[in-house]
Image 1 (cartoon, rainbow, N blue to C red):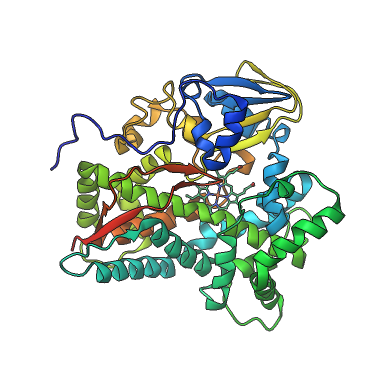
Image 2: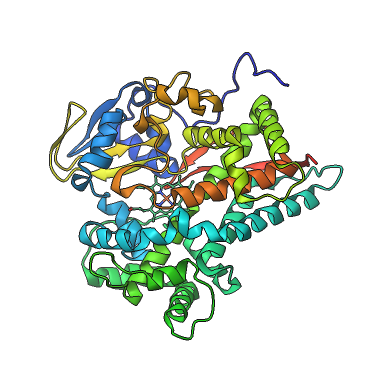
Length: 458
Ligand code: HEM
């Protein structure tokens, strides 16, 4: 067995300025990499309040503060309207982009359609997609190995798109443009997209551009849902069918056609975060051969030459720890932003009315006061015997509270199928000497992709 290196490798990080950036530099940096504005103090202090002219921002990393914002007083902290509008413009008012009673109703009706029980029956088809992806990469690598790199972000993106399509429509090829469209939401905004504006300005300047992006894909999505509402529907009970027939447990009412479309678009667009975890894991494994070796040994011992089944996921605890440690260091959603409707006390500190509340998994997961050796990749921190050492709200890749990710268990299972299928047959080596830069948009991506050489293991 390979020993862990005496000095752990330096991991890809965005710039971390020693001091807070001046406002102008901050405004210039955010569009190029929002994580590059997070300065060193934020990783040292559990609560930091900053003023930017008229706006206050609170960076909350104290686990008690995270709980206050996301769970105990979550009604006081809706999404920041500018970010919500970015989504709303394209996908309407589904769970992802609504607030108040609209959100509550969507969440109540939609959540049972994507919980672990509902997506269980998709597992064999999802596993088949993961196996096909591994077989395809093995073929490309050839017996002797190919020197031509593949972009792992693209590989993960393609696989996850097929998985989402399987869950949503039973794998209907007509729905691929819908998946492609929703994987681009939200697009890079223009200033006019995010400021509040009268309806006529929106119609004239914003809606038309967005209609162009959606093109036929939105028409297709509506058609797919309508077909499932028809009494003549003879297909399966996939996610779109479940959304079309779901009912509110409070008043027994189903979604309207428009609501069902918004919710489907919301869930498919949100599912895209999964791609990130299935990208960063191969980067970390290549940098840490002792972890890769142990994970491969576990997978080989448990799977052997047997066909991969859902039951295998429960038998590979070390591989699961590798996934958790990957999402600690590179959380797919790096920053959660809320706005304080009223002034509040958060972990003993004052959050003023109107403050932007930044609960950032990227900071919290690397915080010096919450983790030992936070920059070191060590999957064993997630071993059962170490569970008591960490606070429940110090690890929040799926957020927490009433707005916790409803796709958490479905995406965890799909990720494990993808990891097991690929790692059983293949190993990936970084194919660039240049730095890998984590880029923070809504989700956390390696800037410019992740080129890797594929090698066959068996
Ligand atoms: C590794 C994969 C994923 C991660 C790390 C992740 C993470 C998150 C996080 C952090 C949030 C909260 C964002 C915020 O409040 O600002 C969220 C919300 C959401 N996620 Fe996920 N997600 C993942 C996959 C999925 C999948 C596969 C689906 C659907 C099948 C999904 C559906 C949603 C929806 C609908 C919301 C909005 C919930 C609400 O506002 O009530 N996610 N996700």
